Image 1 (cartoon, rainbow, N blue to C red):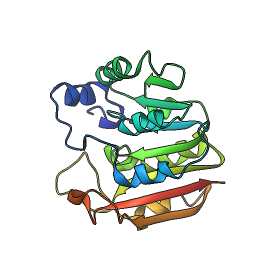
Image 2: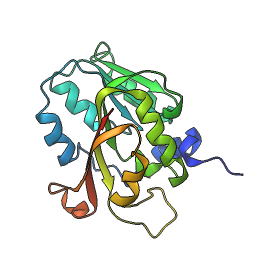
Image 3: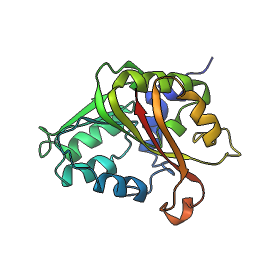
Length: 199
């Protein structure tokens, strides 16, 4: 059986080496920027899984957030991120090369941006369970998920709110899946803003 993309350093490192990063919009997405702009607690522990080029982390750090953690499975990418952010943000930022599903920690906020859609759909129940483990009680999972299907066999892998909600029925309350009104133009109508509170 071929290695699942979700657990493949070699697959994702090759994508970065060959600049095959069609999901990368080159900046923080508008829905996440506007969400971050209304956060007051700059000391909360924030995780960004499958962080990619980490524009969200850059925005957080530039706006005074003190406790951000990045994790990505691509060793090539992680080396690039360390060059980009260290030593300037070494105290405020933890960068981990590894598999999200192997993390053993807890956070106040997890930011989702193109990680969920990079996982094969069979991992979605495991994603929800792992998020419940990683998020502190009353902590939040906030981010953007695709609200469309894709003709190709991914990644990205698409879906819709009705499916996504089912994965979070246990352990989360205040489930909020709504169409983004502030997506970038190429993704308008194809994204959901998601906010889940961990019980």
